Amino acid sequence: MEDCVFCKIVKGEIPSKFLYQDDKIAVFPDKNPGAPIHILLVPKEHIADLTDAPEEIISAINQKIKDFVKEGNFMEKGYRIVINGGTAKAVPHLHFHLLGEISKERTV
Image 1 (cartoon, rainbow, N blue to C red):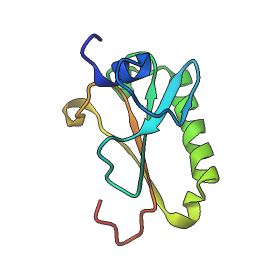
Image 2 (image 1 turned 60 degrees about the vertical axis):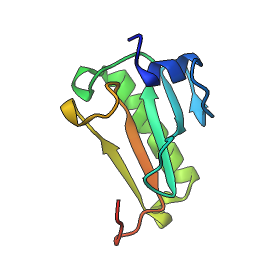
Image 3 (image 1 turned 180 degrees about the horizontal axis):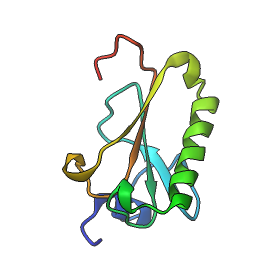
Image 4 (image 1 turned 90 degrees about the horizontal axis):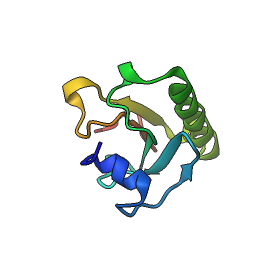
């Protein structure tokens, strides 16, 4: 998709600091964080919604979330995973939010 901000980030047209990338997914910090740690996990291929995603993409993202949770000690710090779908998405490209250092008394 030509005007998709996440496609442009993945292609390097918009600068971002990649925390991880492989042939299927890219991981980078959210530009407008909603938590002390807020990263986005996106498929490199433009996929509009979770309902359109092949299982291999969901599996790759799921594994990377597990890796970040373990490496970042998020079990102790607290974390949330958010996926917006349909018209609730601000960007029409499938993306998972991993928010870290979230307590039970969170405001986000």
